Length: 395
Ligand SMILES: Nc1ncnc2c1ncn2[C@@H]1O[C@H](COP(=O)(O)OP(=O)(O)OP(=O)(O)O)[C@@H](O)[C@H]1O
Ligand SMILES: [Mg+2]
Image (cartoon, rainbow, N blue to C red):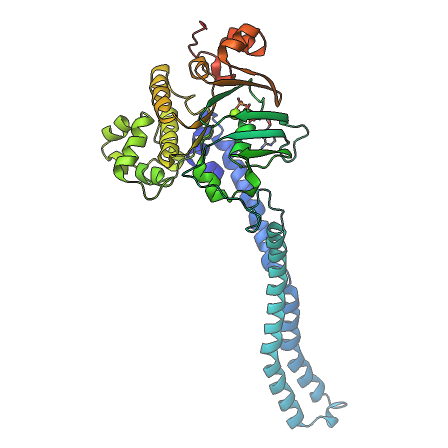
């Protein structure tokens, strides 16, 4: 239901002309579910049914046996009546027990699945309160440090990151570049502790992220991820999610910095416009800017931007970048971007290749060195989405 009847699923089926196939897939799944449901309802019922039959047949058989001239002599009418009356009395409790048995068996099956889930190891655990270290978001400097970090996605057969050593000084802007699949988003997910590194450690102001309570980390590190996710609610509520106590002025300022305020104001319902499931009533670039506004509203000391402006046209992007330049002053910014304009002004450019840092330095240094970065630039951009993006090649 979720896959085929959601906005995305319906669009997919229309654009691929796959409506019939998806409908068949749906009815196949439903048929399977039907069989399972019937089987689950029937399971264990044969016992109840057998007992029901026995209890129904026994009195009749007894009357028959008692009525036969040969055997009947020994059984008095009183015994016979008492027996059948008592049997009727015992019928209900026995049937009750049997159906409880069925329910218990069914519940056991459910419980074993629930416990299997609850027993899964916690991948990203809160620190033990006794061992936790604390960081006051108001005084955090925002220095990030990766020490010998390696990461392998669960189930993957090779490391997405190998031995990454990196220092992002407090207040600096670092651009991560590299071809598609080189591990940029993976690195971003470690900085925000969506995952813990398989090897090595990630430090924020000298504290291992694993020792920081997640609320404190989230107050310091804000992220705009590659895939935006908006709730089916009003723009106001979507933004407030980041900071429930934000005033309307703060909300609008964040939207202005993300270059989305004017657009929102031009809508008939303004900030009370409902964005639609997953934000489908807004264009890709508008969704990105809403996601950016949401993160800016949090006012975090460290900003991690994973292709946060990739869907914007160059002029809007330049405006967002200018605003980010203002907002980002004094903050640590880790930006993953493919457009040269974004990367050029970074204090440090870090080039990733197959999960390893292969080069780092300023834009000018790296161009002069004529290595991997220079090759990326010469090829027309520094990242995967560069095709077609206007790139100024002048260093
Ligand atoms: N959840 C996952 N499970 C298994 N492998 C994954 C998972 N996510 C990413 N990978 C793999 O890890 C590698 C790095 O992925 P990552 O998303 O970090 O790349 P990226 O540099 O952000 O690429 P892009 O520029 O396309 O966004 C890729 O080879 C990818 O296939
Ligand atoms: Mg990515």
